[in-house]
Image (cartoon, rainbow, N blue to C red; front, side, top):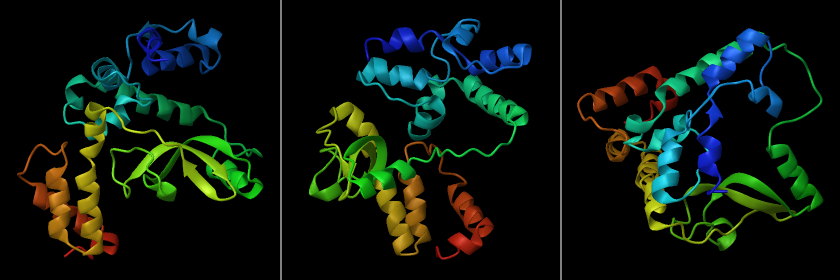
Length: 232
């Protein structure tokens, strides 16, 4: 899959071109044959994705607008235009969408509950569970208490993460950058501490400026007083 990824993602239709196709035809390009009529470009909305694949040798299935939230250098390489195109595309899609009721479900919690009730033992592609799920680490070089998104099997005894072993140190380091932030955020909530909330911001690698940070925190607490007013 990693070997084929550059050819696939390096020749994709951008959302801007897909939206242009919609305006010209009145239809969204859904079938493979529809996409043959849409112009392509290299790695649209996946430039961060491209760097991770090329430099770390791993294939992250996400887009720049999500992965880039956690990387201080993502701003330099991300495809900003395609991120903006996504919101234009989505807005256009919603304006054309006809509301209708259907007897089908898209939330993954439904088959998960069904798998527990029926003891099916099926594998769910991605769930959010503690890394130390059922006494066994899913990712060995991350702490037990951190939540991870990983594949899992579902049976009558619950949700069981599929062990993935150690991640390569380089890629694992991108994940461990978040551990201190989550630990401090949890401590801030438990101890009702604004000082710890500020520390959580100060250790976040995407926070590159100190001036105004404390004022930002105070403003957020003030605007969301019913929910954050306990932070003192």
